Structures are given as structure tokens and as C-alpha cells.
Length: 357
Ligand code: KG4
Ligand code: ZN
Image (cartoon, rainbow, N blue to C red; front, side):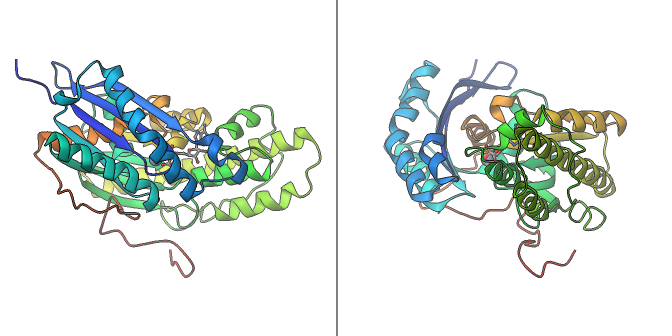
């Protein structure tokens, strides 16, 4: 029996410090031995968003013991690690630098290969941690910093079909929550409040609903929520607004996903139709249910990562590291932190004023 690779993954791109050890089982499937995550919610709460300098300090304070804990929990020894994979981007540069430098230093001391991982690729491949997944598949990535439809053809090979032209969906959830007086990060709370509200109470805009292919836009929605919150007086009205917001998001995603299906089918000769949803917002059960229903109707197999692997974690980073390790794809120790690192490097930048759809 040949020795299975043992990979340490490190994540520090935003406000989660995380480390994970993974290996493979006898069938060659990834096996998570430890997955340690330390969130900084308490650090940023009073500021209503992530403060980069504070986030970086917190990563610095925690990174040693998070990595040590990941090794301890795995039951393996540091000398057994075959490669170290760190997130190199995209993200906040001061935050990325912490995990990246730590990973490089450890790789250098242990004299093991270093692997630079794209955080978005981690999200994109995260369902592989619990399901058999064949390429190509259509991916909807909905997180705090990104909202995209991507064709996933293999490791490192992506075709972007659509993207947000302004806010990311997680950002829209968090901003709406903030306007409703909910502490950061409020996205998951909106889902809870929405359960008590009337989704048809407020009529909210659906920007670029009938144009722009499967590109997305959420900024107008946030502005409409801002106007309504000024007149909100009761708790019930808050619940109604949360429910109306979530309903509108579901309508936008349903319509845009249908368009993405059509485009994905046009671009690929598909043997099987697979739709993967990943990123923090994929934890939203209402959105999940709507997309599962849509997939049934359109003959797509729907795949979601387990809820605990939807948000930022290092198991997904170690997982990409494992795939790259098997292909001998290593990086030099001068690999830079990349605040911007699109999965489809050929896709046109679609943000800011003057964007034509
Ligand atoms: O993927 P992630 O952990 O971090 C980034 O890479 O951005 O995503 C975090 C985002 C936050 O905006 C958070 O509010 C949102 O995911 N989120 C949710 C839910 N859980 C997390 N949004 C809506 N409903 C949820 N249940
Ligand atoms: Zn993320």
C-alpha cells in the first residue's frame, strides 16, 4: 500500500483563521482529518464590517495555535506532512500575507513543497469533499465577496458565464441586515427573521432582471431596502422586509440560473448536467430549496457542500492543495499575495460605472 499524501491547508484571506489536514482514503477520495476554524466575528462586530488591520492582527495572534491544533486533532505528526497549501488570493492583502508567509516558512523549514491556492477554487471544488463530482459542471459561487456563474472544466480551468456588476450577494445580505439593525455578519440572521415575515409585503427591484444574460446586480436592491427602513416602525415590518428581500433574491437567482443553464449547455457537449452551489450564501436553506426544485425541473443534478463547508474554511484549501500535489503543481517561495485573482483570467472586468451589458 503506497503512502497517501498528507496536506496541510491554511486559510486567512478575510476574517477566518483556519487550518486543516487532509489525506485520501483507499478509494482515492479526500479524507478530512481536521478542520479548525476561528472566526473573528467578535473583533469586527462593533465596526459593522471587517476592518483589515484588525483582521490581520487577529490572524497573526492565532495562526500558530490554529495550525498546531489542526495537526493535534488529525492525530498525525508535523514531519508526516507532504506539502503545505496556503490561500494566496483573492482577499485582503494584509490578511492573505499572514497565512501565506506562515505556510511558506513552514514549507521551508520542513523542506516540503509549497502550494499557492486560489480561495475561489477552494469554494469551487469544496463539494468534492463529500460527493463524487465529474467535470464539467456549472458552478454558482455566492459568497461575501463574489457572485458568479462559472463553467468548471478541470482544476484551474474555468469559464465565467456571469458575474455581479456591483455588490456580491453575501454583501447584499449583510448590508440589508445592517440596515435592519442586525449585528455583522447579518446574512444568516436575515434567513431567521424572514421566517416570521410576509414575503409579499414589499415590492423590491430586481436589477438587470430582463437583460445582461446571467450577470447579476444587487446594489439597487440594497438602496430600495435603505429607503424602506427609514419608515419602519415595528418588529413585524422588519420581518416582512427580511422576507421580501429574501424572496426577491430567490426570484433573481432562479431567473439567472435558468439563463446560466442555457448558456452552459450551449457552450458544452454535456453527458450529464451538474449544478454546484458553493460559498457562504449557499448555506441559506430557502435559496437551496428553490435551486433544488429548479434543478429537478430542468434535469440537473444539484450538489451543495455540507453547510459547515459553505463558509470559509481550510479543508477546501487543503483539498485544492491535494489535487495540485498529485499533479506535481508546486509554487516557489516568492509567490505573491494576490488581492485580485479571478478564476477565469480571460473574463472581462465587469464592475463600476460605465459597464455595458
Ligand atoms: O464564503 P464566505 O464564508 O466568505 C467569503 O469568501 O466571502 O461567505 C460569507 C457570506 C457573508 O456575507 C454571510 O452573510 C453570507 O455568506 N451567509 C449567508 C448565510 N450564511 C452566510 N447569507 C444568507 N443566508 C445565510 N444563511
Ligand atoms: Zn470565501
